[in-house]
Image (cartoon, rainbow, N blue to C red; front, top):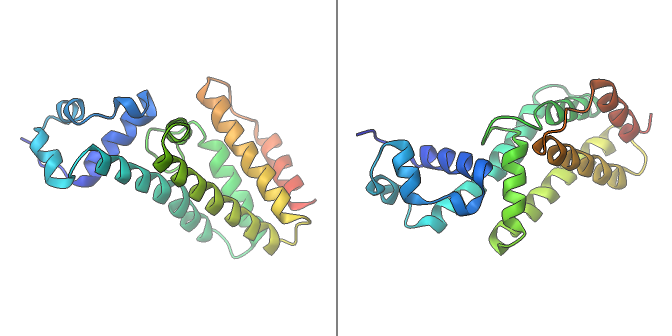
Length: 186
């Protein structure tokens, strides 16, 4: 029998959440999919709520802190960082389950947040952190009205996630570049 880490369980739960929603994240079916007993789960988590908390933590870390760290390594110029961030986000809006920029995972967490205060609090915290980072980049690039532009840019990205999750094609590169130019006030 395979030995799994807590991270293995979280990744499997994130994939299930992205594919089928929070109600499908259940211990027994996950154990079957992973080829282990439920005892493996209880070695790492006290209950399903603990797993769901860990999934939210994974979403916050991978989709926010992980992305920011990756973008920060690309350049010292805030405008270049913004371009990289938007390029990454729009290119990967339909990325693989649980990945660093997975629109399906993001959408599933947001759907969960519509009916669960714990998920709603996580979504609010993530939205605030992401928008604050965008605003910081825009301020560093001397963009006019950075808070408003950060909010519009972020909402455009969320719209791209929603459209891609519903089967729409990606926004073309030129449109993404024009969006960044608008955000920078150029």
